[in-house]
Length: 222
Figure 1 (cartoon, rainbow, N blue to C red):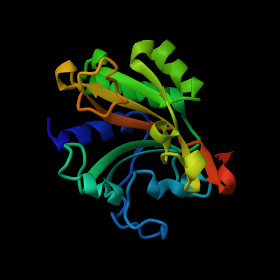
Figure 2: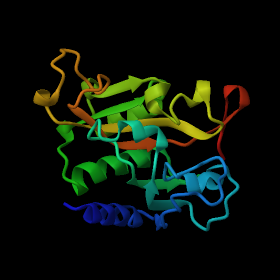
Figure 3: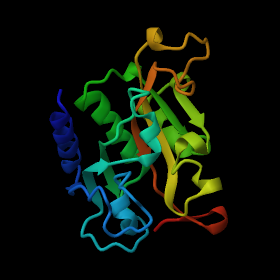
Figure 4: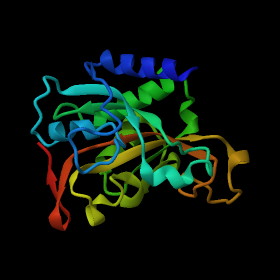
C-alpha cells in the first residue's frame, strides 16, 4: 500500500463520518508567530479549539505537512524520525470526544487498514479513567495490553501540565504496533515503555480539552 493510498483512505474514512476535508497549512505558519514551522495538524486550528475560530464546521480531517526541529538530531539514527512528514488528523471542535475518537481510530486501524487487533497495544494518560474504560470495556483491550503512563508520554504537548507551554493541550492515547519478540530487547519487562524496536507508535489520539495558562492552570476548553 502506497502513501497516497493510505492518505486517500484516511481522509475518505473521516469524510464519511461528517468531517470536512481541509487543506494542509503552510509548512511555515503565516499567522502564528509562536511557531517557526508547522509541527502538528492542530496548529492551524488553535482558534477553533479556543472558541475564537469562525470556520463553518465542527469536524475536520487533514493531511498536514510537518517539520519538527526537535527531531532533527534523531534523523538517520533511528528508523522512526524524518526531516519532513505528513501527519494525518481528524479534529472535533466542541462536537464528538473520546468515545468516537477511540472507536473510529480502532476501526480505521483494524478494519480499514487490516491490522490484527492482537498486534496493537494501547497507552492512556494515567489519570484518564474515561479513556481507559472505553478501551478496556467497550473496545475490549485486555489490561495486559493497556498501559497508564505519565504526562511525559501521554499528554500533549509532553509535560504540559507541569512545564507548559501555555495554550490548547490535553491527555492523549497512543496505539502501538507489536513487531514481535525477535525485535525486542530481550528483557522480561519488554513493553511499549522500554524504547526498543519491538513496539512502534502508529497513532496518537489527542483529547484537546484544556487551555493551559500561567501557573499550570488547566482551564476546560469550550
